[in-house]
Image 1 (cartoon, rainbow, N blue to C red):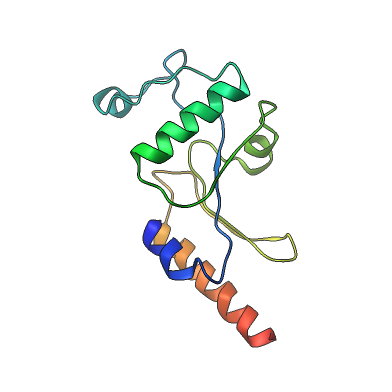
Image 2: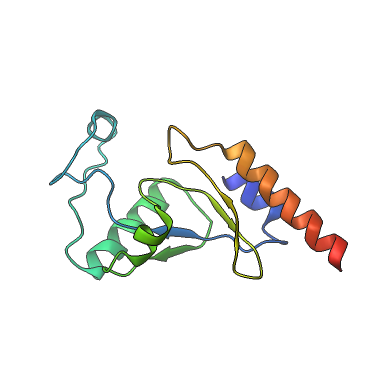
Length: 126
């Protein structure tokens, strides 16, 4: 994702949206989180969610700007964002690409092609 962000970041706005924990320690935990010591409980406050989001982006060395969802989880529910989902939203606010649920059905190459297509369409309009 960082490579794609670096390639298109001057032409497209990128955002990570951090939502609820998909595999919290007080919920459905997965072996890979245990092995990688990714151990966070479900957030009890926005401040806690913000802290965990910052920890994750720092640990993963992500430079993509990160937005933190409010505790009402409206974004997650509207977009089916958890655990990971890739989207392309046009300047008109319409979703032009909706990727599969990650990590198993997420296709970063397909997402990159959708971004490239959007950039090319925007160039043709100008």
